[in-house]
Length: 325
Ligand SMILES: Cc1cc2nc3c(=O)[nH]c(=O)nc-3n(C[C@H](O)[C@H](O)[C@H](O)COP(=O)(O)OP(=O)(O)OC[C@H]3O[C@@H](n4cnc5c(N)ncnc54)[C@H](O)[C@@H]3O)c2cc1C
Image (cartoon, rainbow, N blue to C red; front, side, top):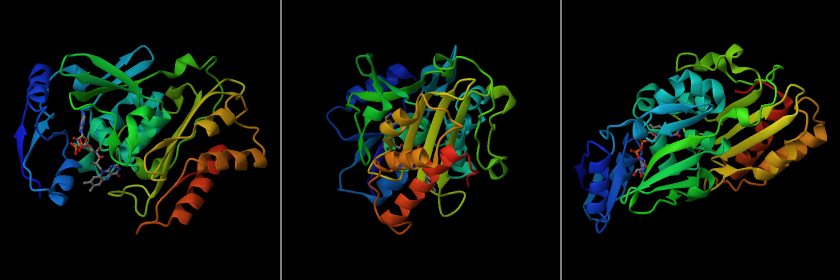
């Protein structure tokens, strides 16, 4: 076990002072501590470290989920439960709601934060996968109070590696709204999975309220339905016009490569096509494009071969409009 002292700043200025004071020492941030504590228990090189506890930092910029027109800013300290229960956010981005309500268990969702899920940079991060599909942007605050914006896709450098400088902290996540793509809001193309087993977890996107121009979901394959990281996951979010033409698409895959991957060529392949008119050949080609971003490992929960087969099949199901798991 790594020994540690905890420093608990109460506001943004105290936080930046604490970061500045620790530049020459090994330190870590802790938010919900659901990843950090198991990690510190497992690993030790004998050196004691400081943990800067973010949980008590007051102020909206770290904690709130704020809507600006159609865009959203999610504080890094927002919990999975808060994301899952936020109606406006869930209606705009069902994929994010699905990811949040499928994370771990009810108890963990009440402490696990969005920032922690991102900064752990696990290839199996559920909220992380949804946010990559949504092409989210990270807002990083540094000790000199400067803000650096970086696309989440670029923030992820590898297994548990992120592009965070030592004098920075992740303050919030920015999401662009759907209206920038939607021309008309008619037609019924929403696609939600497994409403039944998720019903008691948070706010479920309201089909009527959704204006029906979105197809958006998080497909999580695991060996059981809770307290389980994904064996494979796929997040997608499509904006579609009244005629069924796909105006914008975002697709990300989890537990399929060293880090969460954005399937750019699969997105490019379907943008401009009609959601209801894909041929079987096009669906197969789409699934192959998603698969080309995977490079999974074999472990106790699934072989690389199995993960690839599952990813291929769930990718096809996105365009085939089948029910998920
Ligand atoms: C039993 C169990 C089941 C789980 N199941 C799932 C699951 O199904 N799906 C899933 O995705 N995850 C799962 N997890 C992992 C974990 O709960 C999530 O990753 C969670 O979102 C982490 O958030 P946290 O606030 O607890 O992070 P912490 O443990 O506090 O921090 C995690 C890492 O992020 C860093 N960090 C945190 N906040 C910031 C910040 N604002 N700026 C910079 N760095 C920061 C910390 O230094 C640390 O390295 C599970 C964990 C447990 C223990």
